[in-house]
Image (cartoon, rainbow, N blue to C red; front, side):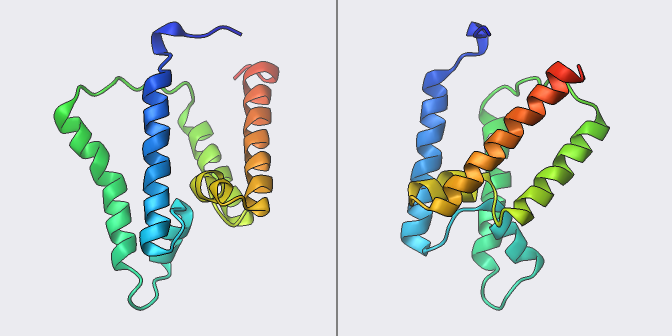
Amino acid sequence: MSVDWNHFTPLASLAGGALIGIAAAMFVLLNGRIAGISGILGGLVRPTSGDSAWRIAFVLGLVGAPLVYLLSAAVPEPQIDAGYGSLIVAGLLVGIGTRYGAGCTSGHGVCGLSRLSPRSLVATVIFMGAGFVTVFVIRHLLGI
């Protein structure tokens, strides 16, 4: 294994992680809610009375922040080393895993672990492990 020193960004990654942690902590302290994206979006699919405004604002923030970034910085050239079929299957598997795991990486991995939730620890270990195994099988065994 080697490090791609041209794309090694520990300070930017640390700053991004700190911002995510601060935002998640503020969200739970100010609203009493977990910043789990799948739960927030799921609440918009089946809305309850008086519960949609904050969810819409949250999703608009998720979409709007990158758009604001685009106004101030050059857009990096994306490189995706997978075909549309692989991306569709991956998205479906993530969605199914999110439903079975009763949450997503942001809900369990960021918010749940910070609250020392045993359920979130188990969920995070399982989805990280599944990701590692999937990448190993796809890249090294199947050579895709």
